[in-house]
Length: 257
Image 1 (cartoon, rainbow, N blue to C red):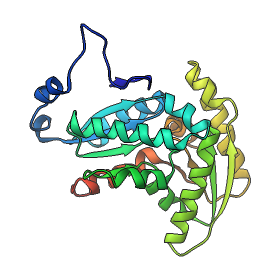
Image 2 (cartoon, rainbow, N blue to C red; image 1 turned 180 degrees about the vertical axis):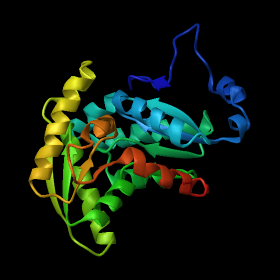
Image 3 (tube, one colour; image 1 turned 90 degrees about the vertical axis):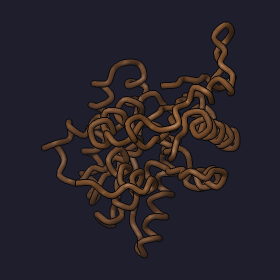
Image 4 (cartoon, rainbow, N blue to C red; image 1 turned 180 degrees about the horizontal axis):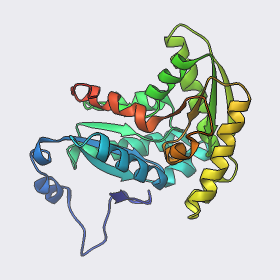
């Protein structure tokens, strides 16, 4: 996994500096044991663990590389979408040129579908946005969709994504939003139990408001799913699970049971 503070991407000071030529020479011509190479483009360290655990179990045919720049969250929170988009483009270029990625998936829900689309036009490899399959699934489950989030800037792009999915399906939905205040800070500060407790309360509150389904707006929230069993009756969707079919389709792989 590659961490980067955004100031000088993928740079190691001497004597450990690695040139592009050396990196290219070190690349394997073929993925490990015939696996397809996929790059996950992260803005939060909290997304890496759940994705790797799920994909390792559900998609052993994929070789995953994680690229992380958590400074992007600050850019997005400050409304500097242009700089964030440029940085994401740089990360995907590295994924393709250095790590041989055959597809890239942006795992941050705060990145708009429009931005992801513009980035995708710059590459030959498929560039996916992790939560669009989830939005489509949410629209299919009913006309009143609850959205739970722990990072407030995620709400606007998630709302837009669900609205676009509804328009694509020829229907309209009502969206009910709720922030789990303090949950994301708790997760980053090493208190996952508090994160989960606050998130369970948020999902339960959305259910009490009569929603037909609840969307977890960030992939880092997927960790709470086992704790919701038996506590809520409405479907709770995570992009963690709905993204896999889209990744396989982009690589020309058939669906699996």
